[in-house]
Image (cartoon, rainbow, N blue to C red; front, side):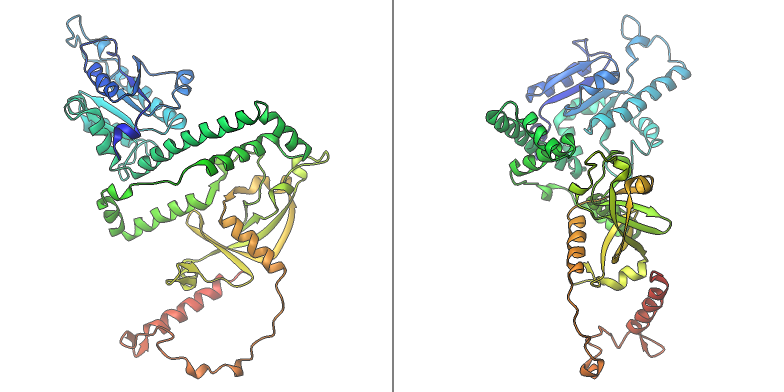
Length: 444
């Protein structure tokens, strides 16, 4: 997990003293260049155009006070304290830059300063979308003396050990760059015209060429990426243990992580993108489109609003209902043949989609109600279960009299006789409460 290896590439240094050979930033620059990184030096915050060109940078080192040099005399001594209004303006510009940078490039940002580190952190804490003190941030504030004494890459490594998500991103990027180069080199060797050849194929099939070309590239990239080796054992597990100790917050965090695995919110989808897995909400009910992607394309002169969707209705499951269905052995929820449950699909809500409740509608009728998209393999499983449900055979009912119910023991029911309330086993009371809750949870 060596930082020089993971953080190779381009480092961006932003400091108003970048041209001064005797400045601290030049010493930091020398440390970075010794590890083989290329340094891009800037003496002011980049505008939107320049920022877009920094989308491949490995990390950023930024001076919090970019206007300190302008307020010093010829000997480097502060001539006068900066006016309060000017200081607020500079802080606002820095905060805005950090927010815009996050949109362009998610990479570690090291803010170094000769001022109070805690004062800068207080400014960052006011922007929860930028800095979350309850979770390791991609922004680290360090003093100039500290970064010089410890060394840039020692600071990088220490930060990385607290941010496993950044480590995984960097390891993935290394493999991604190799696969990307191999992919385009391979296709280039086959024909320099390969994109237009495929474009014509897609057009003949009346599917959106850009979308299909993107899907093709994605599939081929994945197939060329070598198996990943993530050294997650190297991370300190103290933060995780601390999180687990607070069961309420740990469950909330788990739900958010699980949602990220299986659901894409609508603000991350293109407005005109129509696909299987699109999830809509009408009133208290959820609806998911299970029509294959190839049928979610406007063909033969039709408009996108005319595309017909196949929608399965779903209903929210209450927490007691989920608890009742949960299998501690397999970590799954027990489903009937007529439903498919997606756990923690969105906002911590689990939804039971009823396979018998299929309706149709057009994209024009439903597009304003879309809340996101269910992703594979959860979508794939839903489609497969629906296909099996359509072809289910009818089987005769097993007569109750044919089953020896008297053979059921407390062991089979997981009853602990010692745990009782007024002589009644707690497990039986719990089961009764769950059955009552289920009555109110059943869709009408």
